[in-house]
Image (cartoon, rainbow, N blue to C red; front, side):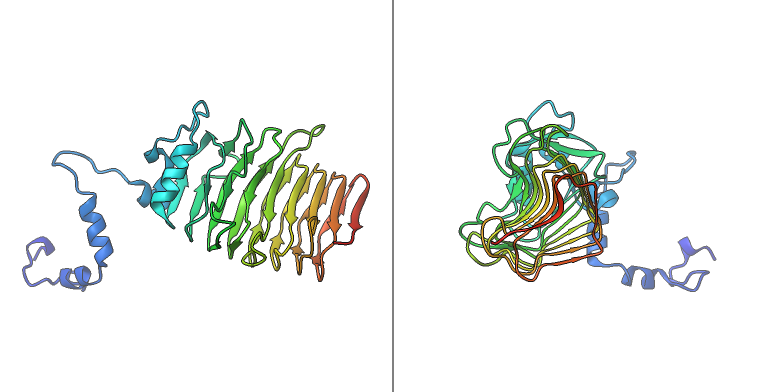
Length: 287
């Protein structure tokens, strides 16, 4: 008997339709219903199906880079409040997005070479917590895109008052080999607390005044397998005051003025390759 006409629910492969349906989750059933279309149309995959998130294009961002997309990113991150925002390939002009106030924000592009954020004014950190001076935030993930500061003296990602956050597979570009500008990632604790257990993993940095900084009170933040090239200072630990346990594991620092400026307590730097840095691979300072 054909399975389509078998009212008993049995099937030739030994799995009944009742068993199959009972194994479906409620979320799956609702998702199937949400994608139902009018008769005669061909259903296409949604952004959630394809990438596991909501597309920034649904909020009006311009991937050509001609129009400012800052408002679209602010609106998307405000409405998602911890959801996953997918940024398709393109060049996005943005200024001071913020967006890391609500916990659990997840911004992911196609790759560090295909999804590019640029800035024209350089008016402030592109990604940061809007409440850094009032409270803390945590559990964010930023991955698979490039930030091109285009020669502006600003911060690409500011993790002030942020905990347990991952920055992964992001490329940071400051200025040029002649004019190195801006900061890639900054760890900071303006409240003297709540800026720890963050991780920068498998990222690349070039032509920045400072690739990564640990500021006063931003303790126990780590960097893994990153490549820093042609920066003023690669790693700068404790430029503004005491910092405990900055950690760098693996990766490469080359062609910078200083590979590491170290003023922290209990810093750990393991299997980092320093090569062809202009003045010194490591310079020790007092915090």
